[in-house]
Image (cartoon, rainbow, N blue to C red; front, top):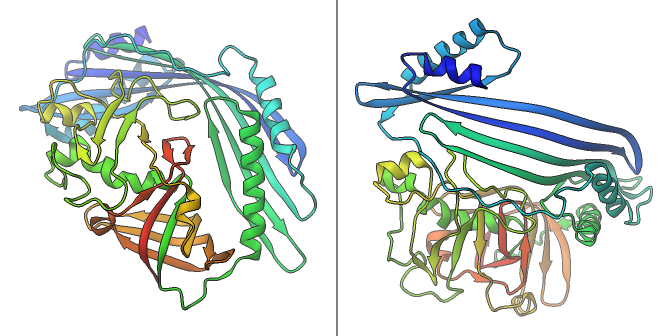
Length: 427
């Protein structure tokens, strides 16, 4: 890296620079059904260089990938190309971050343990579930990773972290003579939880069966309570999170102002309290600092439906003259409501668990999507259903959403497991 830094320092047109180095050690298992086909150890180093170029009071940036084996001429050519590209992408001037406080270490119960042993324990948790020739995972891939990441820049910034996380890719399948259904599913985690993995795999195996057995939603169902179940709850909350990003305020596309209600004057549902946090137990997206090298802290954005803070990347925080730039914080943490799922389920509803694509447009307020698997409760029992789309408008629904007492944790989200959108249109 020293050779690279010297070349950057001695290139006249490079005003500032940033270097991000990630060293990854990974142990991987690949299964076809329940048979291990391949195991693999992978070690890699990824170095990304960003150069900043100033032209007449404007600043542009461009990046390239660097490897130690590169010769001096090759690196010079990459720097020259990045300078050219940066001049084509000029923005109002902004400072890059300087020296930061020491970041907090990321916590994980996998830290310091043998990755091979963890991967094998994960496999045991996956395949402890009953699988047969009808209901099984046709392919399973397990990745246990340790990543050492360092960011340095020309302002003297240097931050480092060691991160552990796991990924399980599954293709739960339900295969009969008449029909075969596959459901892709990814499990991500920063803490190994044997029972949690076992139970989630059991759920998605059942999901494949229910997807196979699902019927078309009855045509007479037109307006009904929609219950979002699972990680898509986090996507609904993006309506609020994205609006409180510095970039929205800078471009004057924001809907909410600090000190004002994000849910309107009358809140008939759950009053929202929402924070962004850099790390949370089990969230694989946890990080001590963002891609600019800003050390991150817990930041409350909404308190009892009132907007109290903004967050975002260094560039836009600089434009807004923020005294303490919060950075790009990865995890949405939402306080649970007081209503248990059992109370939500007293009236007819559709509980949506699998979308082809969840849609949310902050400007128009549109929320909805095509549902591949839902459960229609007709007042007596839940029926697996498919082949329908729901649509609503968050501008109208934001004050009426109801959050469950039960919580769940996913890669980028911790909060209510269920979110109710009242009387939503089915098309």
